[in-house]
Amino acid sequence: MLILVTNDDGIHAPGIAALAEGLKALGQVVVVAPDRQRSAIGRALTLHKPLRAEELLPGRFAVDGTPADCVNLALHGLLAKRPQLIVSGINHGANLGDDITYSGTVSAAMEGTLLGIPAMAVSLAANPGHIDGFAHAAAGACRIATMILRKGLPPDTLLNVNVPPGTPLGMRLTRQGRRIFGELAVEKTDPRGRKYYWLGAAEPGYEDMDGTDFRAVNSGYISVTPLHLDLTNYRSFAGLQAWKDETAADFFAAVQP
Image (cartoon, rainbow, N blue to C red; front, side):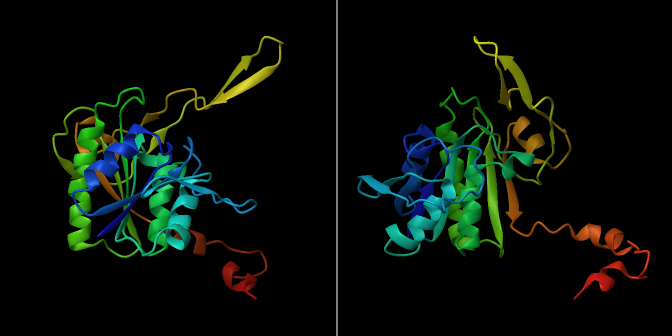
């Protein structure tokens, strides 16, 4: 059994160390991770410069690229065989609700799913300065990884796992929640009188709704949210098909080649 571990916090982050150590009970673990912090980079790929990978220890590679780069390079260059599972994390901080569109942690798991390998992302919903919850997060990740390896995942599906601080009360299968964003950009002035801006300086809120990842984590449970790569909003089809063009009864038929 070969398990690929990656993250977006960098190869020296305590979260990835705890995850890799915990997963050793399930099989051989190879770590391929960015050589430095790469948070909130999404599914970016490095296309305009070569990538370099340094093997710091046997089976532990630091890559000067993004989390998605790490997964691609591992599968197409560094590993002698395909892994049975890809686990990304443990992220320092939650990846809940709309966070997933920014998250390098989740994006690495998405890349694995795109390449046909079962994958999951694991995040600890605690202040990045606190690392005492990584043991619980690693234990939860191992439990879920065991079930993935035994039962598999539905097609085109990855799992987004968020672990609360402290000892979890259990696990809940959840849906993606919604953030409430405040002022994302904060304007400041430097000592020379020039303006500069901090993005993400204000802490966003969330919609406290039943069944969501936010509700589960804030109630002390591990949230397990199945995600898929098809972003099509199927419920919008009926409304959009009702669009009318001034010169054609059926707008969509009229513009087809």
